Image (cartoon, rainbow, N blue to C red; front, side):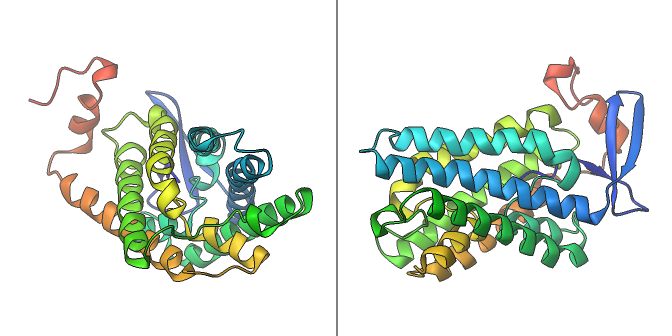
Length: 266
C-alpha cells in the first residue's frame, strides 16, 4: 500500500536504497521479483486479515471486531516494511492505479501488478476455504450492511483517506519515510475499526474480488471494484495538489522533518 522507494529517472526498474544520508545505492529490481513480492504480500495480507475474520466467526467472536482491525493494521505495517523496497508494497489495485494516475508508477506495469494482486487474493481465499469448512456464515468477503449508496460513499471516503496518507508519508520527500509502514497500517486499522461493520472496509478491489470468486458471492461487488479506485485516485490527486512547491528539493529535505532536528523552512 505504500510506494516508499525513490525511483531513478532513467530506469523505471531502479530503486534507490539510502544506506546513509550521504550515500545512495541504485538497485535494479527485475519485474518478476516485483510481481512475486506483490503476490506474496497480497497473499499474507489476505491470509492474516481474512483469517482473523473467519476465526472470529468460527469461534464465537473470540477475536472481536477491534481485534480484527488490529490484525489488518499490523499485517499491512509489517508487509510495507518487508516488501516496500522491492515492489512498493501496493497489494491493492486501487493504490497501483492511483500512483500511475500521477505518473509515479509505470503505466505498462499496472495490468501486471493487478493480476499479481488478484492472484495473491485468490490463493489466500482458497487456502482459508480449504483450512476452514467454508460455510456460508463464514464468508470472508465484503457485503454492505446497509444500502449500496451508503457503502459506496463510505468506501470512497476511507480509501481516499488511506491513499491521502500513503501519498503523504510514502511518496513525499519531506515526510519521515521510516514511519510510512506505521502510518499506513494505523490508517487501515482505524478504517476497519469504524467502517468494518458497515461495508467490511475493503479499500481494495483485490481484497473483495478474491473471496467473491472463491465463495461465488457477488452481491454489490461493483461497489468494491469502483469506489476504492475512485477514492484512491481522488486522494492521491488532492495530496499531489497541496504538496506542490517551487522550492528546490535540497531546501525541502534539509528542513523537512522535525525528528531530524530541522530548524524549519526560511
